[in-house]
Each structure stands twice: as structure tokens, then as C-alpha cells.
Image: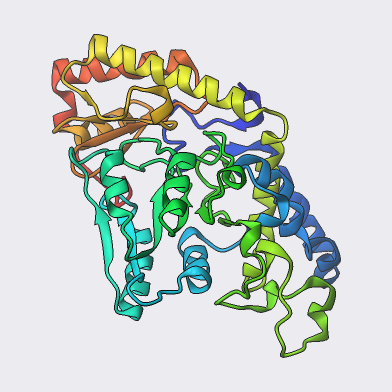
Length: 393
């Protein structure tokens, strides 16, 4: 555990699967880049010009890729559009897209936009229980008229972890391209996207990677696709060696760097730079082992002390990510009452309380205290008196 490397907010923070806490190194890196701006002004670009590319080795380590296969840029949705513009090439009957009925909405919006543009269908894999996916249903959706499938590595509501290597093999054996939204696994679960042969992936860095609100996203493209010219092109995706020739002919940068569009947000990249420095000091296998210990401890405590709350996260360690989802009809009120008592969870409609004991900075004692407070709330009904405020849950 590296709790000493983080500026912990007051109380108990169990919402790192939504927004990670601030590493001291992220603050220091932003201040350093601010000082460069203050003293160097435009000359600061001598230090900033290749900043995104300089982060690729650390990002590649988290995602299990070659450095040239990843870049910090854009957002999940913008990066997904950029990759679909390049890779989605419907031909004849093989034209439809597949996602899941449990996907984060923005992924569905992006895929639907491309399906509409091409007169294709976006098919959503159903859930049998409203929380998880059955592998048989995923495989059934990989039909011979499908061109591309996008799956989440970890489902954002329930925390179910999908079989990335196995499903990637199945998709390829059926002639499909397959991409992954790794937002809820990067920084919590080790990956080997290159070894698995995944075609592409997108993710954010503001959850388990702790790079700050709205941090630049991540994009991965397997090297076998690097010969393609990006379907969406921008100045920052031009080859860095000739970028300032200002030629109108696009000469793509090598690898995933070609998928950058506009000038990068240097201060946001600086926070990511600092956050990645924390991960450079740990092994992802150790992070994963501690994450599983904490979530297993939480599940055992819920079983023992909170029988009213139903665990919808898979219990098999090989099938769960870094958070635990609890279903209860009064989950919203319970989440508000926890916050009033200094414990920060989050809530997802209609009845899910999500708790994320993050391996790098949460403790077993915090998990135990959270369960004690939930037991007290359920016994007294005090949560029913809490009034909702704000838009973000």
C-alpha cells in the first residue's frame, strides 16, 4: 500500500472507481509545469512538445502493450470515435456493431452514431439478471454479419470482469474486430492487451490511475493496424519530426501517436505524469492481489452483517474488478447518509451502492468501519431522513 503518496480527503474514501484521490506527485508535477509556463512562456514547448509520448512507456506497462501502441490523448468517447473512424469498415453483410446492454452510455452513443451513419444495427448483448453478462450470450452475439464488437473489461455498475483474452480469441476466430473499454480496470487489474491480440482499447486515467478530474484519456491500437491512416486527423497526430513544416499533406506519427488531434492540455498531462510515477514504484500483480483481498474482506463482512444487501458483483476473484456493488432498494438514501457520516461511496440507478476499496490507499479497517455504519443505518432507519442534494451521485 502507498497511502503515504496520496493527499487523502477527510473521512473514508471509497469512490476511487469514480475519481481517484490526488497523488502528491501529481500536484508537484502540475506546479512544475506551471512554473515552466511562468518563466519560459512559449519557450516551454521545448519541454512540453513530446510530453504525451514520454508517458507511453508507463501507460503501456499498465495496459500490457508496446509503448508505440498507446498514447495519452482525448477522452474515452473522442478516442472511441477516432478508432471507429479508422477501423469500422462495413462490407456487404458484415456491417453490424455489438456492445452490451450494461455499457456506460457514452460508448453506446458513439457506436450508435456510427451504426446510423452506415445504415447498420447496434446490437446490445442482454443481461440475464440486470447486473452481469453470461459468456454464452456474448458469444451468441458474435454473428457472421457483425463487423466490430466493443466490450467493457469491467462492467461499471456491477464490477464484473470479462475474459479479455478468451473473448478476443473468439471474436478473431469469427472474423470480427474487437475493442475494449478499460475505464474500470486500468490501474486496478493487470492487462496484456498486446498479448491477447485485442485490436483496440480506450480508457480514462481519472479513476484508479488517479490523474485528476477530466484527465486525458488513453488509446491503444495493436501494432498490426499501424499501417492505417487515422480516419480522423489533426495537427498533433502529424509526425513530430516534420510537424512544424506546416505542410497540408498529413504525414502520420508512428503508432498510436497518430490519433492525437489538437494541441494537448499540458497541465492535465502533468497531473497524469505525476500519477504514473506512483505506478512506476509498484507491481500491478501486487496491486491486484491487495485489491482482491480488500474486496473479498468486504464481501465477507456484508455476508455476515448486512444480509439485507445483495452482492451483485461476481464472487469469483477471476471475474471481478476493483469494486463491490451492493443492491438495496434504499441504496440512494444509504449513499447520502454515508456521506453525511464521512464515508464516500457512490450510487448508480436504480438501486446500486458501489464501494471501491482501492489497493493503493484504502485499508481493511476502513472497510470494517463502513460496514458498521451501514449496519447502524439499517437498524435505525436514519438514512431515510437524509435529503438529496446535487446532481452527481
